[in-house]
Length: 165
Image (cartoon, rainbow, N blue to C red; front, top):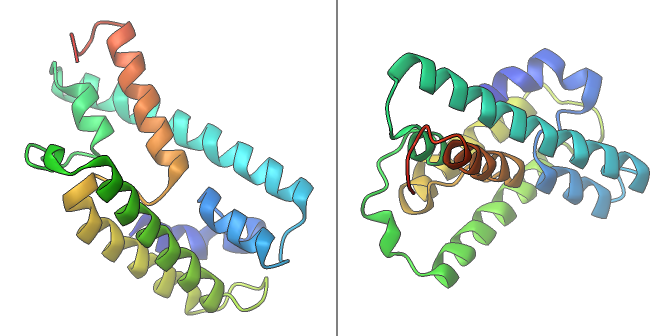
């Protein structure tokens, strides 16, 4: 639900591209220049990495557990049975979710201007995709967040907070 708040809070300043997939969709649709795409995607990945490291730090401080890396990398979900999904199945589910999210974002924001309903439409779509597909993949439907979580796991292993993974 954070995306709904972010759209209304800072949407007019940055067009609310928090997801590299959305930025790429806007570029392909002709609503963004190549130079802007580069900087947006760079900022999104840096934000995803810093956000995951911050979450890693908070969870470490609050829970003082050896399972911090697993908690951060799965966004706090139980993933014991999700490991049985094949790689190709996970890829297809992730691609389907990305396609749905990008299609909804393009339709909800027919122009570069943030519509009053766009935040709710995109936010609830993101929530629904994460809620449904998250049970299978622990997905964030955002490559920047997924990369950030993976780096937090590597950071955890490198600092021996989580032990062997």
